[in-house]
Length: 94
Image (tube, rainbow, N blue to C red):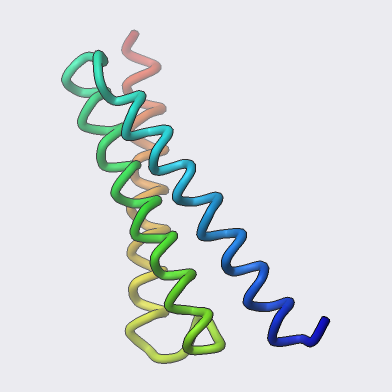
């Protein structure tokens, strides 16, 4: 398997993984308390955006090129990290 095919394969696999996480959190959000529901839906959107960025990465050949893809991925990571922080605060309250 060539290097490009291996790179593409990993990115497609990541896209499937992140899409699965988006689906999981999107479905889990229903029936939750308001604060948790909002968090789950933001997580779903964040993981979906990250999944799409991996598909774009297959076309560009790198996660840092072009600059806007790096920014896109950075924003996704920040959103997901912020959600982790909020989840921690919510779980401490309960």
